[in-house]
Length: 259
Image (tube, rainbow, N blue to C red; front, side):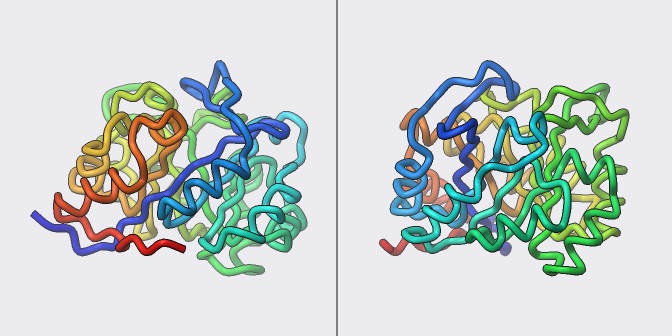
């Protein structure tokens, strides 16, 4: 069994104020430590990319990560995606100028789908990541949520990603609310439902319990990348361990070269 796509291993950093935090089902947030310290650690371990999510930005209507991204960009030379509170093209411009390579948009895109097209036209589709917070509502049915998993939208996830890609989204960050922080494994069925619907890369996020879960979500779910947080923050496995497991299973992952 082998996989011909290049699969990316992404470290996800959820931020609240000055702190790196982690929750379960996107709730019960616990402080982990310094975002910069952990970002540098994962960069040195060989992360392909970093995702920064401002967990409370939608509540306050503003992304506060520009300074953090500017600091990271001095020492970290892999792509960085920033999400949370991106409501306008100007917001996107602000974090991209600070050093981000891509922006992830959820709440504002659902409120105003044209924002997807506006960002894609200004910066290119590869820069416009649709962030989807998905909660299962029936057999093979998921609903899109906003505001860090707090608010229902009534929007079917599969319908929404299809619409968003048609509008210009170049990548999907797909977070399972049901699995997030549980260590029970990534939601393979959800990932497959989305990856089989759209032609753009899908990042599976939420629930990575052990390195072997990466293998399942790639081969069975069609994921193009896996975002991970808890497994790294609590030192349950390193990026090297996860990369080795993926490689042994026949998944094409970037060969680690120390920065």
